[in-house]
Amino acid sequence: AQSVTQPDIHITVSEGASLELRCNYSYGATPYLFWYVQSPGQGLQLLLKYFSGDTLVQGIKGFEAEFKRSQSSFNLRKPSVHWSDAAEYFCAVGAPGAGSYQLTFGKGTKLSVIP
Amino acid sequence: GAGVSQSPRYKVAKRGQDVALRCDPISGHVSLFWYQQALGQGPEFLTYFQNEAQLDKSGLPSDRFFAERPEGSVSTLKIQRTQQEDSAVYLCASRGLAGANEQFFGPGTRLTVL
Image (cartoon, rainbow over all chains, first blue to last red; front, side, top):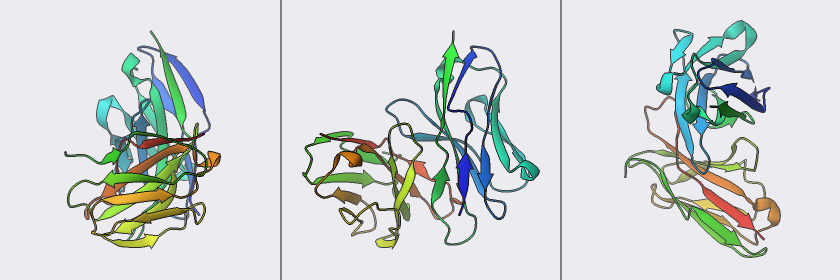
């Protein structure tokens, strides 16, 4: 069964500082990988996704993530955090191939931004 | 609208009451998913529809939970005899045919059982 670990429950950074949120997954092959963001009272918004090809993927709002097969990781990065980035971030894994469908999510990392 | 919508956004129920949560997926999306998100947790899969067929309900926590999508578009998640442990945000997501597993989420329904 697939699983996702987000080791950091809560991270606080200063506005303008760089950010890296960690995500490790467990799956027998290369999965589909996603990062979602959830603001209070809101649904999940997709930041970026990895299916295959270039292991560095660019997303919305200036985020990027790098897939590292050897480390089973898909860490999310942003070079300069804005106050509006304060939210909860979820890493998710999906099994590729026909018929596969459900996403398995990590427990999330809450990001606080100090002005 | 262009996105997934859910109603109601908030629901308060007394323990033992039945509730019904509605999801309107993106028009034309074949696949529809329900997830449950407990406080401080990530979403957890409940059930999956392809058109009107419920292909997987392995995540439903008990037989008090029932989901349907009779015409292959709108879906309803029903919880009978609600319990306090049912309190959570219920998220609906839809996916088109060429989505490569990309799911689009609605804003969720926050259910509080007193």
